[in-house]
Length: 307
Image 1 (cartoon, helix red, strand yellow):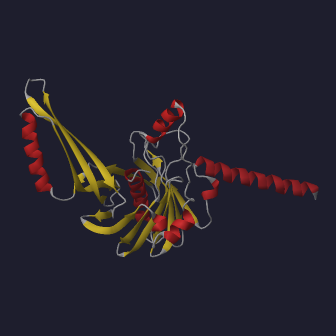
Image 2 (cartoon, helix red, strand yellow; image 1 turned 60 degrees about the horizontal axis):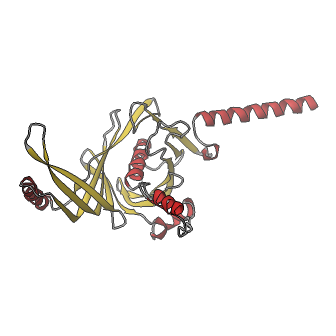
Image 3 (tube, helix red, strand yellow; image 1 turned 45 degrees about the horizontal axis):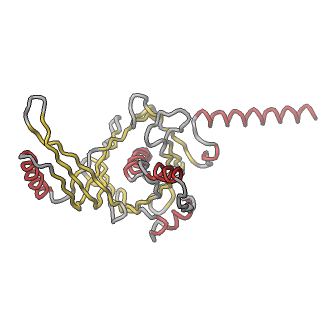
């Protein structure tokens, strides 16, 4: 009897170690392997910053690419202003200008396996500052060097769209305060970590003052956010937690999937898990492949909104 009990214990330990080893090799924390979900890992391609492979009925590839910010309105007026200021600069007077503008921040989700790409567009109010300087080229001619800096007001009624083959398949409102949004509040309260209360301490020495400057400059601000709107004609929403780097997707009012965004700056760092998605097996909502593309949309939103 004692021998049989010892054998059962050994089998239990072996199975436990085997399961733990598999989870570790997949770079997914054990606590995220929930019952009733299917996990899919996106492995970073070493030669590219935001290109991934994943396995789903074969090896597939997907990537996300950001594009240059554009003006969303008054392009003709802005062009005339730029041309006039450029002529003045060539005449010898350096200039700078600033304007309140409407901005469009575009990007593309590229599937590389026959599925249509998605065109992402985020819209917000913002501030544009341009500086122009006359410079002399190598051949001795004069030209104008222009530098443009944008400030984005994501808190002011920002919106977004997804297009597939030129057709809008999703439109949504961006909320930078999901805990205060009447529609997102229940989801945000359940999934997001409690707000952090930072202790404000006045610097009393030069060292503390310099440490304050080092902490508050050059680092992107971490913010939770949510989106709500329609996807393929049905209600769609998502809440994202900056500290966990996780997003929870809801379709037709039901929880559908959880996305871990991975390292936003560089997915090739050792010890940093690649992005992954946990999909509810029996109630996936949107088509399964749509969810894989939404993983890349999450990465694009996280990076663009400053997480």
